[in-house]
Length: 233
Image (cartoon, rainbow, N blue to C red; front, side, top):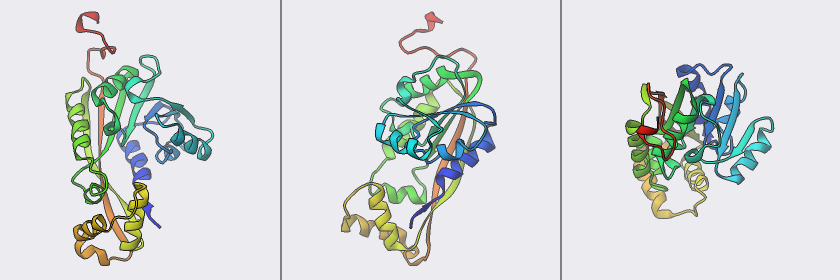
């Protein structure tokens, strides 16, 4: 009976850092619509994008009124300056080319708009356990470097927290292996329990999910189109 609060927390935090009421919002990397469901409840014109048709099918079944579209953040199928807000929901690090994804976001966001990047914090309590099943250290660092290097300017950056709650340690182990669709591995399970230490005895067992939300804006110069040079502007 794993309970995840991170999706709702992301939607709540987004509203705290950006005014999305009445805006046109693009969610890049919507997955199965975990965050989308909370965004769709507000007064936004929402388009949710994902490269996985299976994800979109499941999301569409749950949220039939949302405009789900197949596509990648590295090649956004939209004209320049289309959206008030472009949101990466824990998805930037999944891109092969994070720099290109951010350039595309800068292209499709309006001049006064915002690009919002939400990413896991690799040193967080939950993330350290998840890394034993799927170590994302390298790709998370790469994504953060892309944010620092991109032509967008930072408006704000904030670490926030949510929780994953499990009935007990057995529920934790079963849920984590199922989450990654991995067969149960006793050695990895032992490493997870060792990392938890005394917390193994907790009932329920709550883990803190650490996330960073970064708000970016267009720089004074318009972003370059893919393949263009400074002289083309």
